[in-house]
Amino acid sequence: MTAHVIVTDEAATRVIKLRRPEKKNAITQDMYRAMSDAIDTAQNNPKIRCLIITGGSGVFTAGNDIEDLLSEGTGDAPPRASNLVKFLYSLAHNVKPIIAAVDGVAMGIGTTLLFHCDYVLASKGASFSTPFSNFGLVPEGASSLLMPRNMGHQRAFAMLVMGRTMTADDARVAGFVNTVVAPGHAEVEAHKVAREICALPAEAVAISRRLIRLPPEDVTRRIDQENHLFTERMRSKEAVDAFKGFMARTKD
Image (cartoon, rainbow, N blue to C red; front, side, top):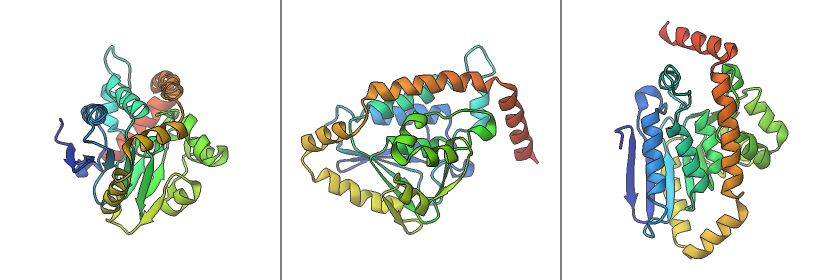
């Protein structure tokens, strides 16, 4: 496990916490592997009834660590290393209810992973954005499938194509946030929801959850389609220029 992902089992709930505040919890390939392992090892553990994904107080995640992402594309291996895709597959095949506790910024994968979750709490100051087009890229995480299904084409277009940011209240209206809470309270409230879920009959929860979700193979098929296009776009002039501009701005 990387030191930037803390995994703890609290009663019947597994908590996966991003802890890289100096980088706004930007996710590296090692962090993706740690999160994927935490999800996968919970699948056949009957003691784990529920999962919580959180970034702690103040920030959820700024998305991919750009330097780490770019370094994956400098050698013979394609950009978007397998750890990221493995994490997405883990989300798609997961059979345990997942709760997300979002406090602060949720950018890129920080927003798209929420559409794999079953219950999302957000602090009043949380914000959600998927600026893929701004970087010359395309949606990932099966977001091109799940976001229009969840909140309609127009809202999905505004976020995935136009790169517009959504507030916590707007996200609740759009339907992918269940509850808006006071700043700093998302994780505490997530534990309350987890206890409520864990108190329900386990088999009934599992069957009901499976019935209301898309089949995993539909989700992974879209993940693969997006990943192929994302990898192509990483090599495009639009993306290369966008990343050069971003790196130049961060060094100023």
